[in-house]
Image (cartoon, rainbow, N blue to C red):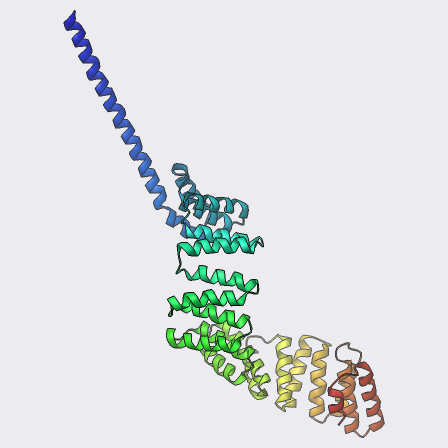
Length: 390
């Protein structure tokens, strides 16, 4: 009997050990599978992030959901899903995932940055600023965060604080081109154009040639009415610019030339623009006006006619045509042209002034004086009246 009990006990003990071993092995296998799934899902997070950049937000969400299914507290997965939702315009849902991301990892700087961005979009500047500051605290050398904080201060009109943070960080990173550009931009926005110019010049010396920086410098020259310097900058840029940029720069050069009283150059720039914009009435008008300034009435008249063929009865083009006829000595035709715009709200005064001048040229002095009187009634404060009546 005792032998039987011992045998039974041994059997149960061995069986129990064997069963426990099976359970342990099964648990280990399940844990390994869970780890593999988790690692596989996490490994795909960078891919999901790239997909957002490529406009594949739905696929990115699918990948992050797989990760969250095995690890719902994965901060990066929550962050990336928030970014994907934001790209789809689902702002409320996105904010929820950003909050979860920083809840699971309070050092996740990008999560704080996104919360700051959303707060600013809601008009909550102070809250947005505090989130940006948390992001910067975790990554003190992040230029994007530094500039974002400075922009918040600038938007509140606190340019001193905005410049202070940029200058503080620039002192630690003196060769950081982006910080220097942000500093120049802040000075420009606060009206310190000359300071901005000096910073852009320094950036070009320390960081080398950059078309964007050169263009920014050129625009500063325009704002500061340094027309000759501005022209030099954009003449260099236009040579290697793309087709779209070239048009922008050529039109800007034409405007710069007009402001610099270099009307002949302005005509040349406008002429180059007409190659691809033959049906642009505004362009023909501007070129004609520049031609008047360059004392080229025939060219101006041709431009006016072209503009009118594209936009019949256009008062501005008729004023250009009448002026060109006046300068050409064709005073009768000039009077007839200006007669067409004497009732135009904007140009009526000018039309009567030029009618008066034409009348004088053909010896109709009494009629000229009547025309000047009508102009004076229409606009008593017109500074051109005294000059044109001479």
